[in-house]
Image (tube, rainbow, N blue to C red; front, top):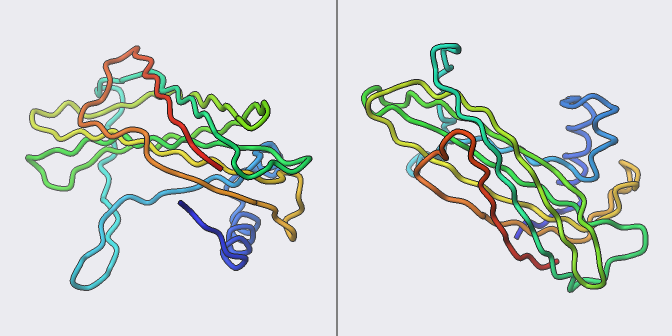
Length: 195
């Protein structure tokens, strides 16, 4: 479960305003704040975080894998939804392939999608669709990884930046695999969450 303090919300809002990672028009279309991930590992002895070095695909010669991942989230609303508030959802998928012959030569893709749930009584339902197109180098010996996580939030998306209103946040994983789906595949997942 993810909890937010006032300071972290303020830092998140200020960072979004100063960095301008999305155009202003696109930011107003998103009902909730996107979450970003950095992949790597933390050295247990020194405590230093080391981001995973990425190999850049060389493009046209790499085989492309296209497909879709659909995640249906059914959310039990234990916390009453205030008038004017919405339930938003986000799915994040990371696909990576590491060459075992050349250590740390990794190609990685991160996909994110967002949605607003349909609320009926004490249940909210959200369908998040993630289309993807990944080009992995053709290598003889590789390790593949496909992981997915989701976040559901209850809050008021029309609140001002100085008065953010997020009442509840819940998150978990929905996917952990050691293979990349074949091209043209639609992979469907269903999870249950509580807010």
